Length: 97
Image (cartoon, rainbow, N blue to C red; front, side, top):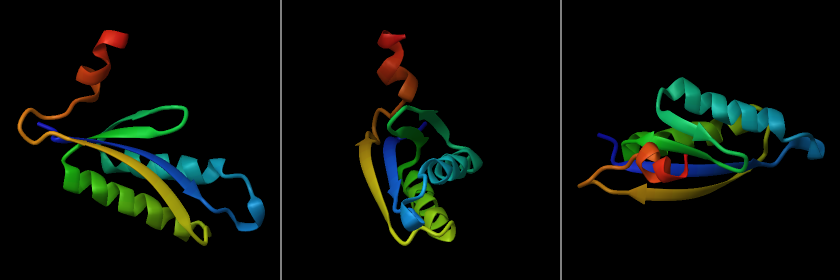
């Protein structure tokens, strides 16, 4: 059972003020390649899993931005941690669907 939800909005600085979308696409690709359950939203992406694993994905996302040429990255992160009862994207949003 997952114990955490981590939502992230990644804001890489782009060389010469270029388009940020290819960087965001790459960040989402890092999440998808990790295999964790996730939900892409218009302003942030939420991941579901074990907190340590999710924080490792965040680290890899930031590293991927630097590899693409970004000189620095801001990551705005929200964490919901519930080790006893678990954490579920579906459970939190089911009443809105």
